[in-house]
Length: 377
Image 1: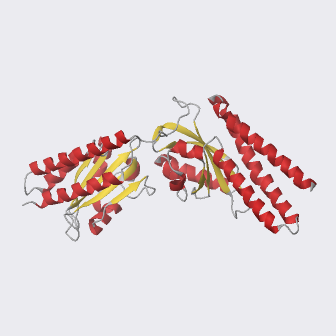
Image 2: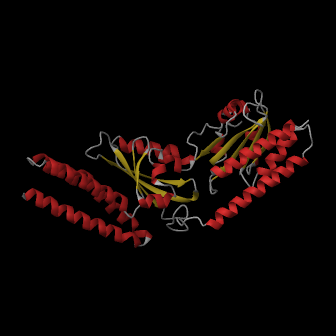
Image 3: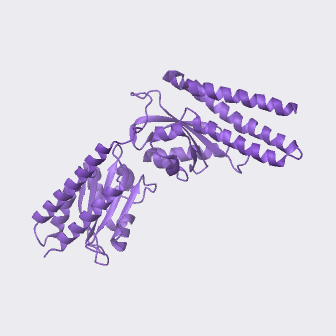
């Protein structure tokens, strides 16, 4: 009985300390590291002391199995609530950087819903250059080599450095060590702490504006295709690429043919990268080959595989060289079962919204029009 009362007092004191941490979210930026250290200490205390202590109390009680099971569930709910309500952006990942949990503050900070992030690598939210280092540090912490910290950049806000603090945890019901990741804007960030993306819901007017711009693009593409010379498939493809470049995509790569593809057009912001990507053999680009053979479009957001588009002439992965955050790879075919006339690959880089399903559908419609124009005698 005395142990139960002592545990209850310790738990009540822990809840009070968590409330104080929540109230500390308004402290100046230069004082946040101290609050972060306190939050990590409290999480470690909850995992290493409170939960095992409660399990020992349950094991020592006789005849209370039903009550013990109920109390255990309540305790787990409490710990989950503490994790979710922490004022700091926190993620729980495994040794492979796969997200187990993401708290409310982390979803606001990253702009990614917890349901989407769970089961996917946290590195998918980071800039390509930071992914390898982050994976390595997470693995080291999971092996028990001590806490780590490093600065990374989110794909959707690459200009803002983010400080990540990694610490290993061993929950009582987990067979392996998990890693707690705390995300905070770096102290030298010029704009100070701010979410990577706006948290306010997108107004209907903006959605209507995007839809109107998409319809204008479809109309402009139709006019360009009608004005293209008949019998010149390469010129049709070049006109289509120029229409899509800038207003719809940051990079446009056009390949003619299917069995023996020929790269006709590459448009992008970096002239050197454009030359290297233009010199790439389309047969060395896995997504392009798959689209040409299967005739099915592909939409990727935050592509995890850097080799999805192969390597350019310099040996660098195209996904990394073009800083791709989302891409569309669409075969040019008039109808299902018809031969593929070519493949269009469109990429967007950091700082721009990812391709939506509506945009993918619009491009699928335009691709059929392009294929018809290419076949015009």
